[in-house]
Length: 429
Ligand code: PMP
Image (cartoon, rainbow, N blue to C red; front, side, top):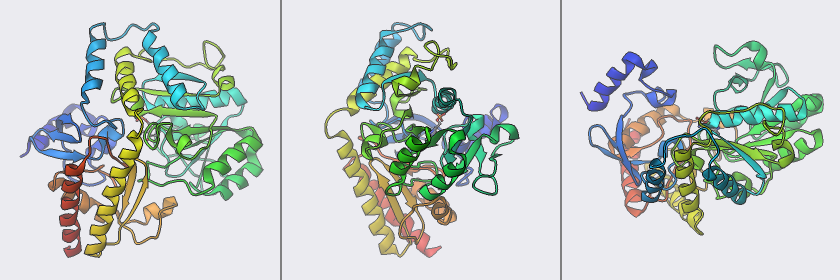
């Protein structure tokens, strides 16, 4: 038995499913999850001392690669001064100022400890600000696991939402409408009926939780226009895209200004951090300035601020995101060439340093149905073949892939060699 197998068996005694977040259990791809003990640059190292080129990057935060010396030093320096005070620090002001300077739609920002908290709080704020209860989200988008967001569409576009998890009261779900992603017509039709009741539209500006689906031309612009028309707060959930697809996030990439934005992952440099913010007039509704309650014992934690600040400063250097995007393009082009050569139907999507891989004969991937029509069984086999070849992809056909600045020519070649072998094997099976 491998160390990971032994550790996974042990883990299941006292941890539900052996993991502290479900996708880590490899349910989507089968087999035993790898247990890691170290990570450096573009690599993660498992408990059996095997090294993998990592395209998960802790699900997004590690845009500089793992264990970046300047980030670790910043945390070490802060460590000397204590772990948490539950009182304001200069670091938090520095963080707020930096976020607001990097993302022009942000006038004010509140730090929290996860993406889930960020979206949950932004939605409460939008409801408090508008005095309306119902929210709109899109099929295939994920915004964390708060009750209002674990809801799927009812049988018709305007029928009440239904919980997507036991434990979410049906009554909560009635306040969430779920519409098809990239379908502006559906949004217009819904708002023509119930526009006056909608507090906010929350959207992943690039959908990264159904693999990677870029917004269709005009979709985000249309959401902006519709929200203006109906007095609805537009929330971009940039937990994944923020500071990744461009320094200013997807809103800079697509040049659309949301009213509120949520961030996580990179903003904490690998520590548990999220934040939400946006227009001053809306943010002033948050306690203690305003009546909408929101709080957190560890919010703005100094170690987390130190890691996040060091990360944001390092990724602000000119050319950083272009370099990342170029690696990602070369990776996808190389994979496509090898899949084509092997005669495997294969499509990729990319926005900056975020990518999607699909075993699909479709011309393009635009809708949730396009994603669901791809061959998830083939992905499973590809995932394990790549793992054998020393490449760690997200263990699910429905998660975006991430590159880091530590990925270079060596990692590119290793990945493409592994893929060439994997595609050949897939062809035979
Ligand atoms: N929003 C988006 C777009 C996400 O991708 C995620 C997590 N992957 C979340 C929110 C929730 O963040 P967290 O897991 O930190 O609660």
